[in-house]
Image (cartoon, rainbow, N blue to C red; front, side, top):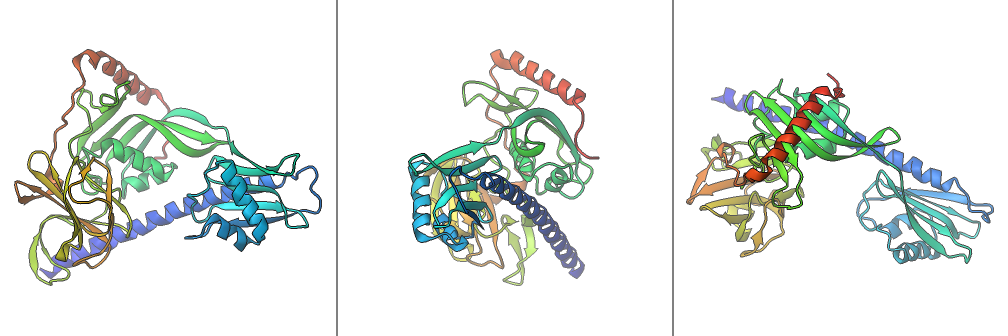
Length: 418
């Protein structure tokens, strides 16, 4: 039996190595974006105010757990100048509160330490800038770079993971999350993907000066897998929010009663079934699915329901249990934080807590359980049917949209790398 544990251990090591590699790619991409922001801040500071003489430039970056005022002082800005910048930003009602570590800023100051111009990049397109007006007051404005939107087809083939195939194709990490949200009710991206699976995406790509900065609507998507079979989704636009959404070619809405997973990090570390317990050191039934994820990762409800309990529960650590229609219950264990209370109504995909390692746990992960009629069932095996079918009167519109999307996916040049 030891060979079985060795294989499982090796599989865990491989998954961890893949996750580290993906994290490195994402971190590298994020750092390149910050460098791009830094250059943009410099371009604003290079323009000197008309009456400024003998000016110099102070530069800095946001640090973890530091306020902007703290960062300005650390960069060398005086207390009076820091207070003036903060007051000017507040007066202009500019959003500077939720800043990320690494984001750059700069200030051009005169010989007396007074700020002539201040600039801070708050995302890939937006810069907050302060300038002196004729009366000598610092006045704020938000400057946005122009963008271009193109509807394109992106195709890919799974080699190691869906996320990595997106990166290998030259796209940004957020595209993977966008596509997962289209298929999250039909495809278990942690369990059902296989090497050689293929996919196509008809999407809006947003660029600025040739750089991909964001993505708009996914108009259509297709996944062809060895386990999943062929799964397609087409966006149907409608003024009624209850009707709009992704549908298959039969007019059945992809959104279902239950999500396939309660978080975005799709790395399964332990499956449902009999296993060797890592802390009790014995074989016993594992009544849920464990997802490995960093402490603090958001956890959401897989379906609408009412919170039965929210608090400490022995070996489960911090636990949330939610009751759903049809006699179903879901449990979320080993949490580091709980955002709901007993008796509260919650909606599907509402954040209810954060991943942790409380209770009987060997490391940060989410233990997820699903119960039917009080008995544990395998979450990975549940096929929840869609509760929504497009009204018959709207089917001709959907058919037209599907035909147009399919034609465009066939004719549009494939931009992904083979």
